[in-house]
Length: 358
Ligand SMILES: NC(=O)c1ccc[n+]([C@@H]2O[C@H](COP(=O)([O-])OP(=O)(O)OC[C@H]3O[C@@H](n4cnc5c(N)ncnc54)[C@H](O)[C@@H]3O)[C@@H](O)[C@H]2O)c1
Image 1 (tube, rainbow, N blue to C red):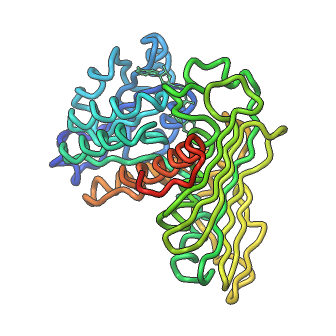
Image 2 (tube, rainbow, N blue to C red):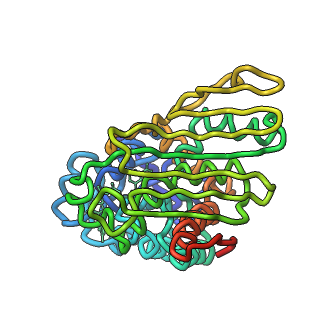
């Protein structure tokens, strides 16, 4: 067990803290990964966990450490909890983030920040009012290959951007949805292949391509018996004038790949899963020396998560608290990506091009 430094427990003393106590809300697939990451951080300790039913939280605490809590309120009011991570069904994220922020805890929310812009705004306001940090998980941004693309785009290595495309071609068995009481529902998943699986890649497309001006989207339920879409496709127009496309599905048997493509008048790069299949610019035939984590998030296996991206993002979040700066992916960034997902749905519903902001 790591030594747990006593002392500053409120946000004022946070910058001097050497150890951070984490409270986990949600102990499912991603909750387990959060516990693993906290175990790997040199300056963090799992203090408490909350999940349903309480017995599940107890079993989780027995395996991973920390105390089991009977409610979110109990967890966020614990003095040994400095940072709350939220890994519950997506529809619950804003209310739980607000509860944590109002209790004076920093909050790291799994994607999506919320399933509506109202929910996202409420979480952002609560964090601002409480003076706590709000981060939204988007671990692929921390992947060294994605960082290489971003740095090259910022340096103008690709020239004037023409296309930024992202596709997520997954396959999910029917049981993936039927075995869960929240996946595939509007109320708790907030959408399907795009909101749940595709959002990481939507985030990369927007991060690389810059602000989006308009979206022409289609979303359909083609092969699963679910309320939400299992296939979505969209053309986006960036404010820069560049164009792009987004595709996400959970119906592409046997599960293909994730691809991110950036093309400009001085260079292009194509990332498939975690490797470049093309990098060619006027100045280089290969990406610059790569270092840093490889998240491996391209896997089509729904339960195959690599901890590397989360670990890097958790580290950035704790540094943001110490340095009193925004985390790399803050609430506003999480909201922008959510807005783009919602714009695809809105365009599909209306059958017309949608202009941002929504
Ligand atoms: N970043 C990623 O790559 C990634 C991967 C998987 C999931 N996620 C996100 O994580 C979230 C959870 O996904 P999952 O696959 O772990 O789901 P899951 O169903 O495996 O786990 C959900 C957990 O939330 C708990 N829970 C449900 N209602 C609760 C409540 N009212 N109070 C406290 N706990 C409650 C459940 O008991 C369970 O422990 C989703 O928002 C999902 O989008 C992100």
